[in-house]
Image (cartoon, rainbow, N blue to C red; front, side, top):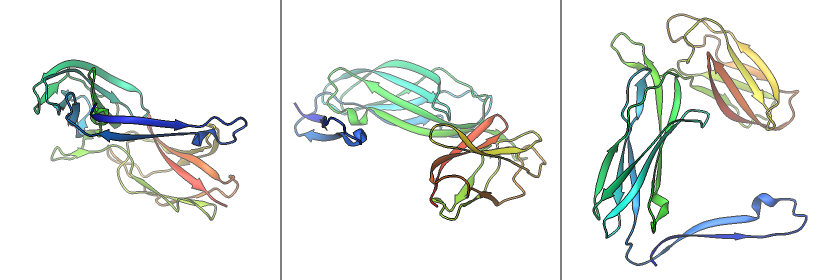
Length: 250
């Protein structure tokens, strides 16, 4: 039968020291006429930057790429920056062949600043192409801060260099506003793969206005006593945290 297929190969070797490379998965296409193919075309809302407390109607576009009428379930989920689902809804859809439809879901509001992921998917019995069944998109929850009503994205933009670090020092440079709307310091931590904290350092900032920026930037981090390896650098701003992987090479 035509469609997209998945093949998997694996090996079982007693005493294998690297089981992470024992399996390989790939897809291939069987040519022919595809009878049933439901697909996600696009996330229509929420996108870009939205304000905290603003009601948003999640919306996505779905398509029937097969040659017969398709009836299938659609799913819309929203995940926070930690991957936790904060919204999940589903609706049935019936779409003529070669056509598409826009589906709206119940409204949602966001109280916490940060970056979110909208995840849309479809499920249909006998779907011959599952590679187009899911679509992901990100959006930011910010706050209206400027006099003209424009948005300020309340999340820090920072650059860590060099990465990998070979000299024992990392330089952290902030390039944008911070999600830190009250007085007080930021904190910076580094964790190893087991979750153990190997460094913690408060960051003094120059405060003023609802969206302060770091005045003491760039900031040099002395990691010469930290063993070489892969770590997670975490910046805490208010009640929100932002992370980036860093590599140390001594």
